[in-house]
Length: 167
Ligand SMILES: O=P(O)(O)OC[C@H]1O[C@H](OP(=O)(O)OP(=O)(O)O)[C@H](O)[C@@H]1O
Ligand SMILES: O=c1[nH]c(=O)c2nc[nH]c2[nH]1
Ligand SMILES: [Mg+2]
Image (tube, rainbow, N blue to C red; front, side, top):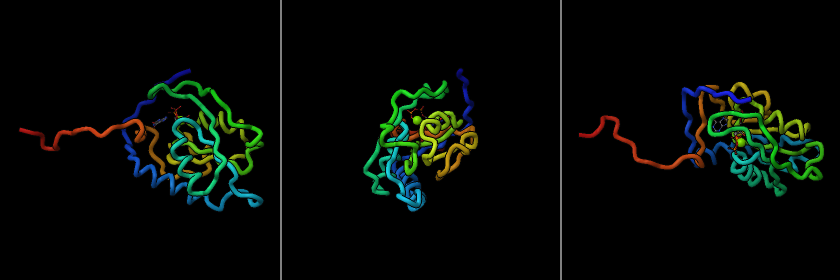
């Protein structure tokens, strides 16, 4: 099944902003792991979760980092999420003490699929849209459902015309 989402607005995130927001996510998570061991592992949802997961694992000094690969979108058109690569389940166990990190939650379908494989893990994203918010335990910034978030790895600096135009 695919459906096209109308996006009225754009939210453009620079590398600097992403760094600040991912750090803020780490600080919010600090000290909120399970009482008997804290956060012991990070699982990044590729590809968008990899940069935030690197920053969070660095801030929280977590050295065990794995990935789960999920493909859900072709540009802005969504399809059913598919797990292409699983993390090391011997390390993940039931997910206790595991932080699952993604760049954003939109409809929540990606996280639904990922959560099912690690039921006791804690899910955190940097950004969240209302439809998927309930799939996430911790996030930093919410944007409206009709906003498309543009990440720094999808953008480049380019010339823009002055507001008043040129002669
Ligand atoms: O909540 P949902 O509606 O499922 O959408 C959110 C997911 O979509 C994007 O990933 P995408 O599948 O585009 O892959 P990418 O991370 O490799 O860009 C984004 O990075 C999230 O993982
Ligand atoms: O770069 C992205 N921006 C978004 O807003 C979004 N929603 C789902 N997948 C997305 N990818
Ligand atoms: Mg993704």
